[in-house]
Image 1 (cartoon, rainbow, N blue to C red):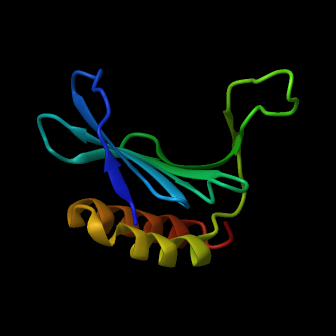
Image 2 (cartoon, rainbow, N blue to C red):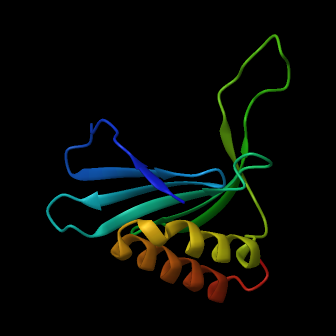
Image 3 (cartoon, rainbow, N blue to C red):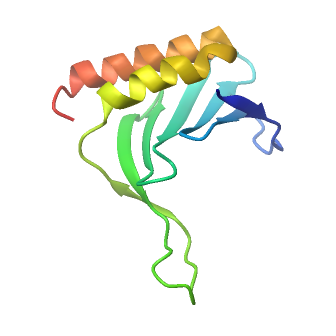
Length: 125
């Protein structure tokens, strides 16, 4: 189950929320004035080959895998996002529906609707 973590807020016009479980990290930004979701990042399969699907109200969708930068035990590099192909919708959606049952319904419904929209626009990936 996704649980919410309290995080410091350093953006003036946005409020950020962070939810996590063993499979997902979910970051959601709300507009302070509008109380609407402005963007989100859903990180999934985070203990294996972590991937991220994101949506931004201005930029739209993007899908990445996370290169954690851990090639050597002697050198730690910063993780980076690398453009990724197929969004694993059939695996991620059922897990997200189950994992998000305890978070704000406005958030979970919005994320599911956006992921459905993504897969309709990108049926092969």
